[in-house]
Length: 256
Image (cartoon, rainbow, N blue to C red):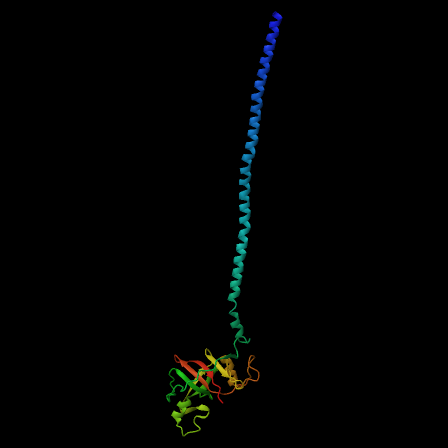
């Protein structure tokens, strides 16, 4: 009987001990696993934002750094192109050193011919208007270098010519125009800062030239480069425009 009781107690104790071990193991195992899973889960979670936060500023810094030099290079390029544009007026400087001048012997519309040119005054005063003039010899003293002396006369065309000179004077309006040489006047004209054209005797076209070129032609020099083939200066008359007390236009008129 005592033996049976002892065995029963031993079994009970074994069962109790086994139960305690299982209970201790379960919480221990669960507790041990839970923190491990929790730790494993939290570590990547906390590491991910750190990694993203670290990479983002690095990319931003790397991107902004190379962006600045191109802007500087573009600005320098713009400055260079602006400087190049500023040098364009140097063409004018080259023209003053003997290089060909743009527009020399350029074809332009012929002059607008009035029926009656401005009246010539005997006192040699020249109010603003469009006068008819021809190149004449220099006076005393002779004109300054670069100036040419023109003689002013009054021109009449068509019916105005016939009315002025009379129908009986058949020689007054030959080729439908005539000039009155009483009175006449002279004017010295600096050949610069004006619009100047000459008439081509062959083609009857008007050609724009510079004052220097006209001065050279009047003094017997050959035409410069750019003149039409076969062009020779002919002493046709000019329509001379005075505006503001200054000669502003010299336009040669082709006549038969």
